[in-house]
Length: 399
Ligand code: GLV
Ligand code: MN
Ligand code: MN
Image 1 (tube, protein in one colour):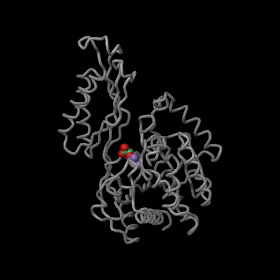
Image 2: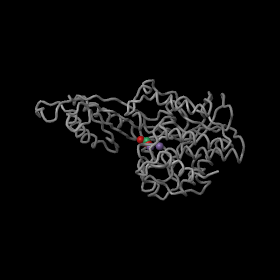
Image 3: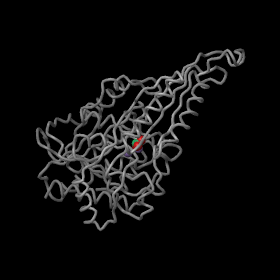
Image 4: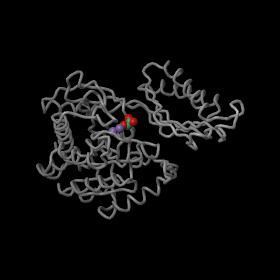
């Protein structure tokens, strides 16, 4: 069987962009190819593959999970637009390899193991994130199905088309037992582990996150004939509001905020914009400070006569101390230097941690780069992280 580094190189080709990045948005053809390839690898390991109605793909040690409790491990298969080759897919493939290897070496575990490749976590196509893990935890709102991508295709339409194809290859997961624990292995996506020369990070907390969509309205009219004092220009409103947002949000210590996406209607050089919408991503490790920042944004948008919609809202969360200890033992087993840290990135683990004991294991990111083609991790760290995950799963499921 191939090791984690060669598999990651193969998956990098599924959605490779001309900028040497990877774009694999939920339900697109690259995403479908990647989920199918994941299923094939699972079958090669002798694992049983399943799919659910949102497009999460599972590889299990049991043919029939029924009401048994089980241990879940995995991450997401989608990427950001022109993202890196590791975010998400590292954890999906590493859990698959780990569970497949454990089954081959030691046979069936005492507690069934399930690898998962979540359909979507990034929010890069439908402007809402974590739909795979939210679905698994029965927390996906019906409104998500009506969301549209920037070409106007609905989430539900894209989902049906993709999931139908996956269902030709695997049956539907029917598991009603509790999830005993969830472990997600991921690249750090920040500079701390590299700076501190650590091999492994054990996550104690994940920051809270609110993804907002803010719309400013104007009236489309001729760029040459409409006097400046007779215009209602959505771009002018948006720029004014954005300027005020930067000034106010800079006052919040340790807040991370990003306006990373902006759309103009009708998007023509000689037409006054009728609508401008932009994203605002807010994160803070203190839920209170995050809520305060949100209130400040809400007040400003109202003052500026703009419309604010919350697209994703996940609370800051503390992960399991007990499972962190288990991960620490696994790191020690592999003689890895490790430390605790907080995750500033969002993860499926933070959706699941609200309901199930959850832990995350990080490996260093070179120069802390992520969500870009320069995202990278040393091969030895990738291999070591997979082995630490495997050991952590072994300790939980076999002993
Ligand atoms: C997901 O990776 C996020 O943190 O936005
Ligand atoms: Mn990720
Ligand atoms: Mn990401």
